[in-house]
Length: 391
Image (cartoon, rainbow, N blue to C red; front, side, top):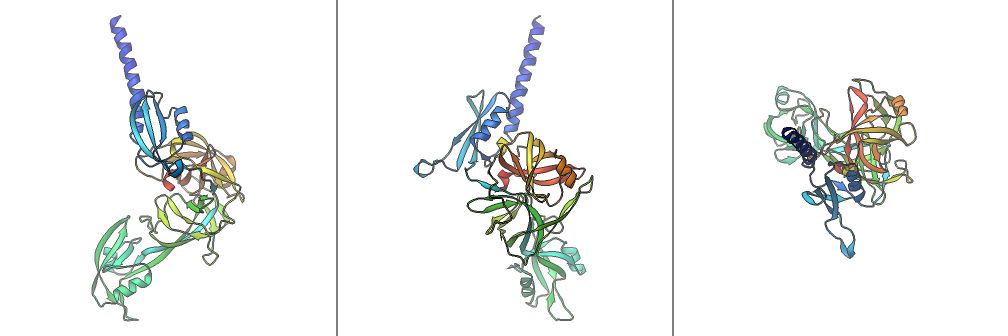
């Protein structure tokens, strides 16, 4: 009898330990800096996101002038509701409204450097790779194609070239050669200093017109380097067709835009979580009657959500199901996994296709993220990035 009672106690203790330790391990993956508000915290507590024994409490960290709420906050996680076990600093979600995106846009970036397109001799075949971004020659910055030609006309047989490869800076010595036709020194590579593509607008601040789009970076042709921005522009583009996605064959939106058209805005940043800048003209890009707040990842729950897209010709919401939401210790553009449930979208595109990257993901009336990738094996499944990382 005593043995059976001890066994029951031990089993209960093991269960209690699991119920506490498992959420604590989840807490260890949460770092400072994500977006949060009181509603997000309430949702997390109601859904027992961190187990039945751990509750979150949000407090303003700083106060602005005249007693206004500051931009910084602190979340305290408490065991049994009163024992503090972890604190994280958060950015408080403002009451600012954002236009909900969902329209394809044309993006053109003038690169900070020159992208190697092809190599023309043994020297460059050995030391440079297609997709390398040349940023300096003999310590002289390369900001355009002209800078390369200028840097080489010093008569040197060999120059030091600094390149960006896999987002890391490397240096190498390369022999120059003389062009038989012009007599000018050459490096032995074909290069370009701009890239263009199509993505989807995610959100636009209704006051400042600061925007976020794409959800993942624009990269060079090799896919290894995030293209550094010297300058860039956003253009309105036209959807002319859709190639439906199939298993192991991702589809795509067929869009066209002209860089000779009037620019809608600039591109200031291109990073792991998309492109951003300021729009000078939002006409044709936003519905001024469709606005929402941003939502932090703490309020993201498994289950029903929406994708906003205008691929049908009008801006519409499509049903999806969030099947996994990661609490990432480091920033990543694959924050959550979702499945397309809306038969209209599946009929139209087969699921998620290239060009839909940046489509807003909505839940509880907030913009919580953006579409970033499609599963090659199943186009009805995709990845999304938390809006936390995009802002």
